[in-house]
Length: 448
Image (cartoon, rainbow, N blue to C red):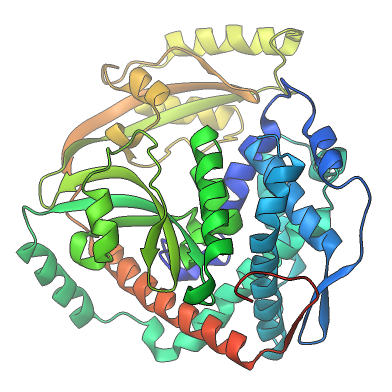
């Protein structure tokens, strides 16, 4: 489970919420997705497709998860595509039912405020008013319960794994020192930043269905479906909670079959691998970056910002008087700020809707638009106004310095060690839950 931090995982649903928020914000330039979803499932169907330890799983549950996939990726989903996705959706929902039952058996309560906070985060990231998400989902024929159930099981499962680890959830200074020594021995070798989607195979003798699903997902990724969203929806590795991100890994941390592929793949261009056979299933990978251990020199920027909010979301075709006035105000403030202290004072005067200090910014890892603004901005000079849907940002660079990003801090090493332990515990517990379960399939799945 390659989470950035186990203690933060139950609160940080970034892989689930941030991509979906972007998808909900996308303007409809084609036929409304709600119409597409309606074609896939024109009528609710409560017929039972499986019973998991006496708990039914219905066709409506499966169709709702398929519609959520269509909505979150922004891609049209045809009935033929849904037919190919449906077997794997059923398997995924069976896994979620087993995890939910384990959460309940341990008397773990997922507070409603944590679920509400995750949903609120979606709305906030997308500039929605409180409660607007329900209407967006309803417009596309998706039950809010579908998203709530997915959030609930992800939060609760992290707490299960924390219990499962027990004392092993603490990484000692000795553990960190041993990993640091190992990294020093690896200096000069190549490591990779990888995204993964793992498709579990129950019976290797009958893997045709899972292979067909894996190829279907690859086709959708190559058509433009965002990798983190698809990973969050369908990957059966714990990295799904982090949008499929494995972080930076070296070759000896990967399966040999994966090493052979990533050596040949270009980095940072969105290339998607073919299915890779690994123990337990199939893997899809994308290579986000490659670097030499000990030699990744980049730049870190310290900056300050002033944010001026709009009263309503910006519609470029209908700019309001308040938005016009905000732009004029931003231009005036840009002329009056001559230091980072000035920027902090101005941002506080505007209500500090966003923090004055956004923290250290790794320049080469910022999106291209932000890089273009900050790369050549002189120190203590205000950037041009940057307009977004919800307001206008002014930025000032306070300091810029070189940094070797390949040097991992003790906290980063501790996170990686913890992620490895949690991933191992998760796979073992998933296997145990399936072995003990009574699953009555009402539809035929290959390999089931």
